[in-house]
Amino acid sequence: MPAPLMPIETAAELPKQADVVVIGGGIVGTCAAYYLAQRGLSVVLLEKGRIGAEQSSRNWGWCRQQNRDARELPISTKSLTLWDRLAAEIGQDVGFRRCGLLYLSNNEAEIAGWARWRDFARGEGVTTHMLSATEAGERGAATGKNWKGGVFSPSDGIADPQRAAPTIALGIERFGGRVVQNCAARGLELLGGAVAGVVTEKGVIRTRTVVMAGGAWASSFLHQLGLSFPQASVRSSILSVAPGADLPDAVHTSHVSITRRGDGGHTLAVSGAARVDVTPQQMRYWSKFLPMFFKRRKSLAPGGLQGWQSGHESLCRWKLDRQTPMERVRILDPRPDMGQIRLTLARAREVFPGLEKVPMAASWAGYIDSTPDGVPAIGETRIPGLILAAGFSGHGFGIGPGAGHLIADIVTGSVPIVDAAPYHPSRLDGSVWGKVADF
Image 1 (spheres, rainbow, N blue to C red):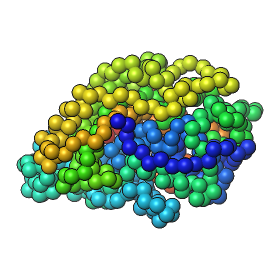
Image 2: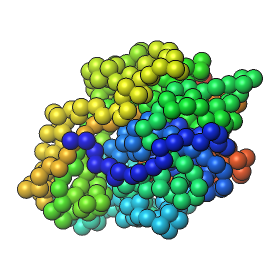
Image 3: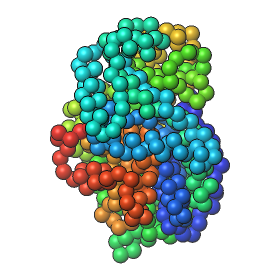
Image 4: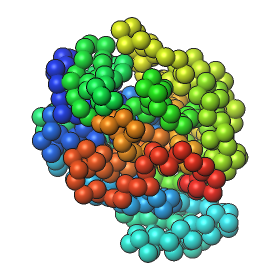
C-alpha cells in the first residue's frame, strides 16, 4: 500500500533549451521551479517518475518552527509565510493550515529542553507557549492521560503531502514553466568546465543553469561529475488510518505522533524510529557520518539490503546513452518495517483511545536523505552553473517553499530570502563534530 499521491498530467515533450533546468520533482525541486517560473525565467522541471512520489508524499506533513535548529529557523519562518500564499497564487489548495503543533511529555528533561528552545526562539521573534500539567491535560484531552507538561506552537501548521508537490507543479505551468514526468536526467554536458546542457533519456536540453534537487539520488548523480557530496539515507516506516477519530490536527509524544490528513484520517509515526540500510555510499562516507550516528544512536537501528538493491546510493559510473539506475527504479518505494508499523499502531491506540476501532488505511516507507550535520546543502557547486539543493534531513517538506525561494534568489542574483551561508555545501568538506543539528 504505497503512500497516497494526487496524480497530475504534465507535458510529454522536452524543449530544446531553457534558462534553468531543475532535476527532481519533490517539494524542494517543485518550489524552486515554481519561484523561478514566477520570475519569468523559462524553467523545466524534470522528474524521473511522478511528481512528489518519493519522500515528499511520505512524510508527516509538519510545517514547523518549533524545535528547529538555529540554522534552519529563519528559513522555517519564511517558509510558513510562503505556504500561506501558495493557494491564492496557484488557485488550488495545497492543504496548508496553521493549526498549531502540540507537544506533550512526561519527561522533565525533554520539557526543560523545550523551555530552553522557547527562550532562544523569543529572540528570533517566534512565539511558543510552554504548558503546565493542567494546560497539557486540557489540550491533550483526546489522550485521556495526565501529562507533566508540553509546548504549543500556535503559528506552526501542516500541509497535505498527498497534494502539495503536485499542486505546486501545476503552479509552475500556470506561470509558464514546463513540468516533465517520467523523464530521467542522466547527466550534464559541460563546456569549458561549466554547465552547457542536461542529458535526459528523451534528449538534451541546452541550459547554463541546473538545480540538482534529486533528494536521495543527488550524491550518486554528482559522483558522475567527479563531485563528492556526503549524503546518507535512513528508511522510515509510517502508516495512515481511515477517517473516524475525533483527534487534534497534530500532536507529538515520545510514544507516537499523529497528523490529520486531507481526507480526515491521520498519519501515525514514531519519531526517531528509522532503519539504516547498508549501501555503497554509506560505506564510502561512514567517517563523515560518525558524529551524526553517535548523537542519534538511540533512534537508529540496522536495516537490510533494500538500499543497496534500489541503487540510489550507488558508486557506479553510468553511460549517458544507456539506461541508468533512475530509469530502473522510477520511484523509491521501499518495503515498510511491518514490526514498526504494528508497534506504531499499537502505541497510537494506547495514547489516543479514539483510534481503537479505526482501521489502518495504508502503510509505507521512504528514504530520508541527510547530510552529516543534519542541515540542508544549498548552493553552487565547483561546477559553474550547477546548484545543489539536497540533504534536507527530514525537514524538506516544511521548509520547501523557503528553500525554493532561496534557490531562485541564488540563480537570479537577488537578495536572498535568508542568509545562504549556513547551507553552502562547502561546509561539509570539514568536520561536523559539535555541529550536528539537535532536531
